Image (tube, rainbow, N blue to C red):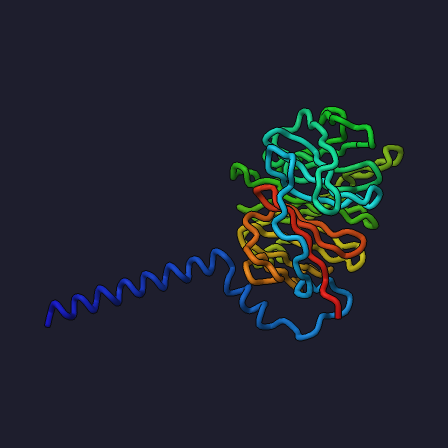
Length: 304
């Protein structure tokens, strides 16, 4: 009888340990908050929103041919109607067509670990160096074959450094408000808002101001940040998480209002997106995404 009780006690202990482990994982991956968000979603899309739930995959896991290194980040150039991304092992700025073909490769000189690129004006981009927490404004034209970081306007932030390789992962730019959003991957996860950099008019310098919103950041139910996109039509920010396999739409107040799942069976995906690294939207509302190892995706809003 005593042995029976000891076996039952051991089984109960194992069950409690397993439950504790499951709760720990759920807390780490923000599963409780995500579940509550899903069940509290309205039936119809709110006015003045992207409403990511209505997007469906069109191009899925198409390999980007002609590249040796994995791409990271993504931005849309409305002037050339093309996309730009970066590679970091052998630093390059890559121009892609809207169907994921490599159009050209531009050598990046003096960049240690470029992880993000963002269009800010015709022929002008900002590139983020992750570990150094450095932002570099660069110029390119149709004849550009290389870019030297030493020739560009630069700013180093040095904010909450500490965890190696968990620095700046995403950039987004508000063209109208001239605000640059900078995502720190995690430990801690942050979205900084920078005004005054890049300075697009050297004749009228403006002071640099940096803000963050920790309440907003704590309310984003994802484990990390891989990329950002600012939608000028709605004023909403999209936050991409690789580890949570999710894109979250944040309204002007920073409140999550819709999401796009990157898991198998969701949004029409046949397989889960393995490691999402970049996101952007063009002026037609098409959503583009890159994932390691050099995979290209597009999502479009379903009609009706």
